[in-house]
Image (cartoon, rainbow, N blue to C red; front, top):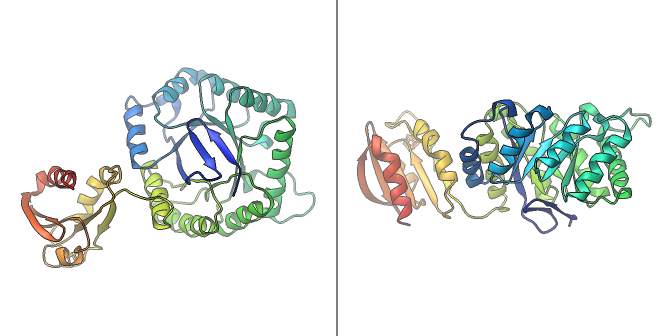
Length: 343
Ligand code: SF4
């Protein structure tokens, strides 16, 4: 078991459940007016940590507002300028993500570590395969990543700082996998796992699931992120789904939906896109099926607590395999959630 790290109200590592992270996809200079409600939805979907890029202290007020309005612990992502890290601490963030190799003089990183310690923050040492120190000993990349992370950890420990999480990311899934495995064999600090720059939704889901799934099965990984060129809601959906599939997160709606075929008489794809995030935010431990036709759909969805199948502009709702009611497609979403509420 790894050490446990405190990130605001969250515990990472040790006996804490594996947490899911994503990264805010809008520059702070354009912080959305609906930021708070968007964060609430992501949290309800199963997100635990929000990382926010903080490249410029001119955005102090926006970061401060984001921290106040975010229903999850916020981690400020800092590149190059240690002053941004010190300022982010003043804004109330729960953690910092830094790569000491990008900060410059050692004293600058030390200022950050001391301030993090004084204010009870966590630090993620975020190493990427593309930004490693010179490989003077001709080590393999996983070995170089591990040795570099261990050097930083011991430096931080000499400053009396232990609230550290490590990430060792690469865009190559096998390299990422080997780096995490190697680190886990050498250290009991908790790991934030992920494949970086992993591509669009489909590509990232394949690469990340293959890599993270194998690590998690070996007990490696305390917190994770799917890195997707796409929307962050998908990153959270994928992360939560992986944990549920591995039995590492319980509860919530298990969505079943048919692959659709030539018999489809209902646009189940659009309907699923319309209701998915709302279903994922529901905490009931139930199965909901969305099927493309009324001929085979109900039979195929027999195991579901609630099912919906349609013909053209009509939808049929099923409860525990029995037909419950017929509704117009316009009211199908509302009636579906009313029915879920009865369970
Ligand atoms: Fe095809 Fe209907 Fe089965 Fe969907 S539920 S795969 S549309 S037969």
